[in-house]
Image 1 (cartoon, helix red, strand yellow):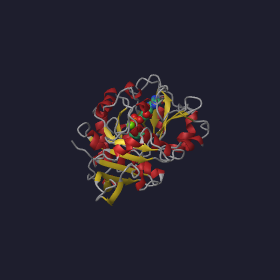
Image 2 (cartoon, rainbow, N blue to C red):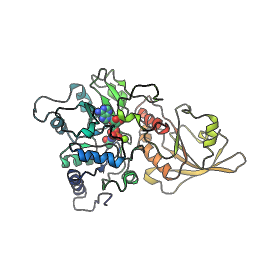
Image 3 (tube, rainbow, N blue to C red):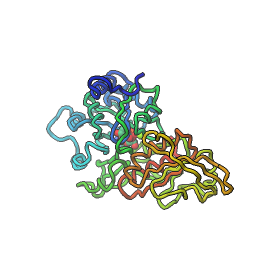
Image 4 (cartoon, rainbow, N blue to C red):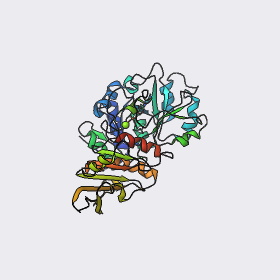
Length: 391
Ligand code: TXA
Ligand code: MG
């Protein structure tokens, strides 16, 4: 099994991409590839057996539809109306979004053409499909070389945090796939924003790399609504993006999210005191907290020093939690992602994975203000990581 495509050949980028494209055309084992959001697990979207290979590798429920990735608009137009070039088959409502955000972290919903060139497994029996043009040049070159759109969910094992480096993919899918294209760390770090412009008013179904405010600035999108629900889902209708109902983004550790302002979702003082006594206690800070994040629950932070050689760009401090008598009650791990929301989005999944790797039993996460920028996407992922909703 060759894991990471070697880059020592005469044409260091194109040869490995050709190898991967050939694998995608001729086998039913998906290939992991980088995008600007997260790594995707791709398969030829027009071949059923290839698409089924994705569900098998991920252990993903098959009622959760996949996003179709295209390298350029001409492939999308061919997909929508193979026989009649001329009229633009892309609904006018999407034109301003496409002009502004493609290639980039935005997924649009389109009516499935009839007859559909897409494998039915892509859409999980819905009458629409989601499509996006990734900003990553590696991704677009790969798709062009395959000559077919690639269906691709995030390349994590189902329920795990999305992968933002090739080694995250390797950790999850080792033994289940044969090729990972290593394009380094993903620039954005959270998934694409999913929008539905086929309804009135149009809606955002999943917050992501493009913010609601940016979408609202586009013609025809001034009244865009939130079509997702973040807080407790009980008593609500089925979420409109089917994937939103599953447990998601979860490290092995218990995640406790502090909303901005310090409020904890569903964890009382007594339970907090129990949690700070676990063997390894971790915190992810976003610039507001110092040590007080765990102090006030009967423990004090002692001797935090930077660990050697931060893995995947995530710097972890390590120290101890001691009780009032100075006795050690827990090992303490500390990650500071900084105040900038883009930096938090970029490092969030990697931090959750790194703390898992270091053996955290509980991770306290400091929220960000979700009324601006990508903070909404970050908080959405964190609330899911902290919730107990299961598939
Ligand atoms: O950034 C991304 O979008 C990444 C990279 C790899 O491109 N992909 C990704 O795919 O996040 P996935 O499968 O993990 O998430 C797809 C989301 C799910 O929430 C799914 O329910 C929603 O898009 N979705 C896809 N097709 C849909 C449709 N026809 N109607 C409603 N929601 C749909
Ligand atoms: Mg995913």
